Length: 551
Image (cartoon, rainbow, N blue to C red):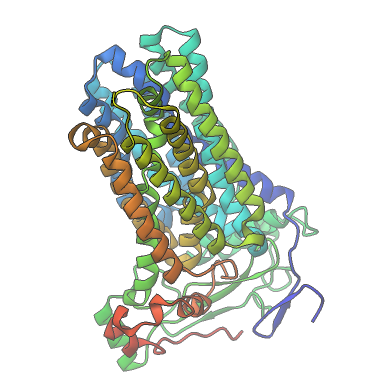
């Protein structure tokens, strides 16, 4: 075995091939969706004070404006996974750009509060579909050795979008009529959508998605384009020869091994159908080998009963909930309001300037994760980040609890705790939940249901984001300013415990593999080894699936 190489079955692959220029281009174009995502999430922080002044909004209405983007995201998530799996990753991204453009125009020209809510829902739908399609596309074009870094690029782009939103909000606030500045802030996202549409239009579809849907020649052509720059020659569709091509499917590495059921990648069989297939010996086993841009073997689609993925779903649901219930989104969206409480009266521009500091912190730490995630490991970063979030939320709770005689004034120690708490939550989130939620979820599910799994995760995370956003200001008014942060602290502490006993490191998992490596990784975790925590049917079914990786 050559130094640095890895072995999969009877095949040996070179280690850590370089990222080709074309993959860099694909990554940059797809990550513009992350910039859009972050911009539309972050722009409300700067636009809300101007919007509130212009339309004379109450606290409840302000919360509703923030929450309606997430309500739209829940709606989009119900269809986003299906769209992504049905029409393809690239096409889904293009559709998102169109929806983003429509939403930005509606918001920029909105004459009333009702139209603002409608525009926020439209943008929310685009945010949801974008979160699914961008991650799926990046996961399926990325060489395995660089997958963590490339998928995390999307989260860095989200952080960059936040930072751009904060900077543009500050510039608009100091240079445009205050009551109308929000229109420009909302409208700028349409320019980013147009840019991504132009760049993505000339790029190939995910070769894994093409192969799954029986478009073998197109998949081979897409792979050849992706391999351009690493010594492989790009080929035209009409020049592809399935017997002689360097991507020959007759070759053992590329050969499709199709079971008795045929190459059907429709919805997963129900539990009852799965039992019938087991009984008559005709359970479908569909495994395909396809080289990705790195020359790595990618297995595609093992058909299993949906019940097999209950542990995967538990982890995905936990990550979706924990990244919102820590209150990170409220610290970003309501940062001007929080710092106004802490420091007293201040100008609008100076309050918005504080969000720029948080945005810079978020961006640089997320960028750090991109370069280090594959070296340091997903699990270590996840646990470290959640721990920092938990400690920081305790700091915020104490800042609002240890009041002076005049409860409306914060002392220097309180202000120090508050600033450290806000900065710590943003830093911990950038190290953990931000880049790792979507990366881990995309890695633990097989490619044939990855879009739907990401859709389920997106539905859950946006539903909780809407809940958290809609209850922050009201919760402070009703239960006191410290109570929301105290609740976030309690939930984050529980999140740390769960992550410690249930979530393995997923860095060695093959993106389109048959799932055995995921099962092995889960089997090493304390929680999943306890029979009291595992349904009885799991033990009855364990070992029943058939998996063929032989060429």
